Length: 95
Image (cartoon, rainbow, N blue to C red):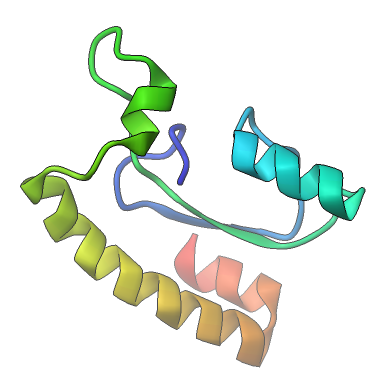
């Protein structure tokens, strides 16, 4: 999940930092490197002054879930493309 991308936007990256994402910080810490590929999926910013931690832990609204159903399908296709044809090709096709 990525707060810095609009809801449903996919972004493949060959490496990078945590972007403040606690889950990604944990993975980077465990692997002792930032050099691993990742697929980011946008969930948008929290409304108003809502705490980002509360926002990422809540369920999607019905409208958001409709978007995410298609995004999950597209993410699976992107991962298959990535594995079959490589990161650069997948980034060109899906970013």
